[in-house]
Length: 408
Image (cartoon, rainbow, N blue to C red; front, top):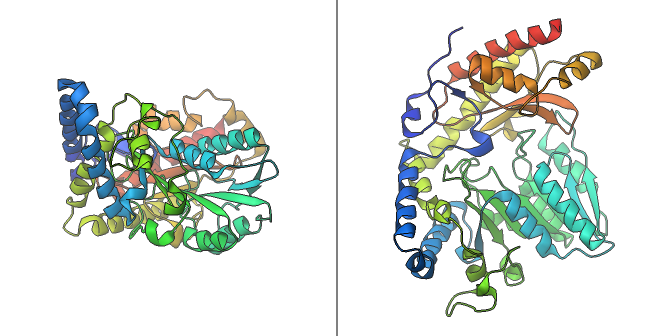
C-alpha cells in the first residue's frame, strides 16, 4: 500500500509532508502564521531587551491571559503563565501544603512526570501517595469515577486528575469528580494538558477546581513552552511560582502580586506565551464553523480512525465513544508472555521498538507504549491536517509489523 498524502491543511504547518504524522497529541504542531508571530515577538525582544522586559512584557502577558480566560471561560486574574503542564502541576502540588499524615490521591493513568512531582512533594512533607487503579480497557466514565472516589479517605487532602489521560487517551469525568471532592473539602488539581482546543465548551470557571493546568502548545497549537495554571480566587494569593524573581521582594505598583511573580520569573523566552492569542485566532478561523467545527471534525476523525484500526487488527475499542476526543488509544493484539518478553529486549529510542520500525520503515509517527505498565497499545491523534486514509496506511503497516513480530 502506498503512503497517502496528508490533508490540504498541512500547508499551514511546517510538518514534513513525507511523514505520516499521527502524533499531534505529544507536542502539537505550530502553524506557520503563529511561528511568524513568534519571530516578530523575538525580534522585538532582541531589538532592546531591557525595554522589552521592563515595558512590553506586562501588557503582552495581560493580552495572553485575557485570550486564555475568554477561551476556557475563566477569570483572567486567576490565570498564571507556566512553561508546561508538568511545571504547572508541580506548582499546584506545592501550593496544597501537604503535611505529615496527609494523603494525596492519584491514579495509574496519570502522566508519569506529574506523578514524579507528587511523589517528591509527598516525600518532603511526610505525606502518603495513594494510587487508584482504573481498569483498562475502561468500560464507562462511571467506572473510572468510582475507581477514584473509592480511594478517598478522611486523610485525603488533594486529588490529581487528568481531564484527558495521556497514555490511555480517555476523557475522565471531572465534571462529576470535582464537585464530589469539593463537597468533602478536598482540593482538586485537574491536569488538563490536552483539554483546550480538544474538548468542546471547556468551562474552567463552571468546573471550579482548586487548580487547573493546561498546555496551549498541543491543541491550541501555540509555540512550545506555553501553558497556564488557573487557581481558585480564594487560594490565589497564597500560590507562588517554584522560582521567585526579584519581583517577589519588589512588587510592581498597581499589579497583583500573583500576576507579577508568575509573569516574570527571571530572564527567559516568553514569546511562546505571547503568541497564544495568535494561535487561538488562527486555528479558530481554519474552518467556517470556527473552533466548534474544528473540534467536532477532529473527534469524528479520531473515532473513525479508531474504528478502522480496531476492525483491521481484530481488537475492541478501549473506551466508549463518549470518552474519546481528538486522540484514541488502541490495544495491540495480545501475545504470549514469552513473545512480549522477547520484544521488550529490542533496543529503542522510544518506549517500544515497534515505534522505531514504524518511523524508519513506513515514515509513520505514532506512539507505542503500555497503559499502567500492563497493556501494549498505540495512540492515534486527529488534527485538521490528518485524513482517514492515513489511518488505513497505519493499519496496513501494523499488520505487516505484527506478523513479523509473531514470526520472531
